[in-house]
Length: 324
Image (cartoon, rainbow, N blue to C red; front, side):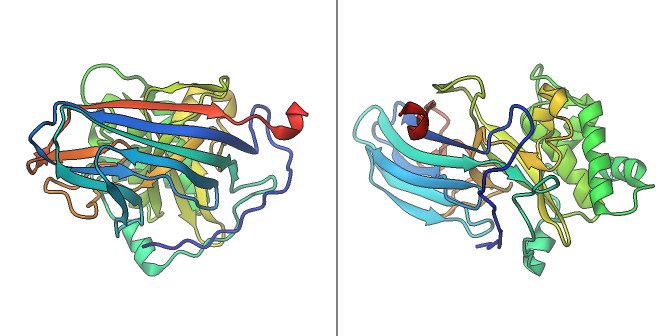
């Protein structure tokens, strides 16, 4: 399990317009495995966990099969695991969280994140390619071109960020998007958050800058409750003497006025569930490593079983001071 030493300042700070220092909410992670009768099932569920930027409490965790907590070894992601023979058509699972998410600021003014220790193992791991995130060929050539005149890793990372921001379009049309396939991103120059950040990570790693992938769910800034249709992902890169620096290029693309903010900051309108790509779960799944892990993963009789209905929602917890 990787351990990252972080220092967080939770004092009241002035932040840019539209940003929140923290957000307190109830997150409801529910799903149904459909048409399961007679099948031998194994189910892995990503579990939100506390870290320096989110405080997580479990309100309840219920399921039609009993489950237990495990943890995969590569990134330390926590997992709920259930297994058994299904004796009914549908199996329901429901986990409710109480979460406070904090804004992240790694660059001036008033950074929340200061120095983080990166072990040699972590550095090596965060410089390696993933199955769909190549660090040679086209991504490396692009990175070499945009970063060639930049003096240090922070400037190189900013040049890569600007390249992805100005070159990619947030567009979920056709086929191929959403897998985080860096060659698709280089060719199509469009996609979702997975494609944006896979390109950033590939280019950064090719320049010797450790970078990592994080995934969870977005919280609409303009709403206080509602359903959540799908995931959101983002990235960090590492600079010696500064630590992990967050970026969210797809959000910057959607909100160009926050282009500078999202280089070095993550707002509080999100919750993280896991980190990394090419994940081998615990206990190990029978199929290939997971490209990423944010939805429940199910195997029936030893094969991937996709017949799963998802239901995610959130509701802000009112500020007690504001209601008095």
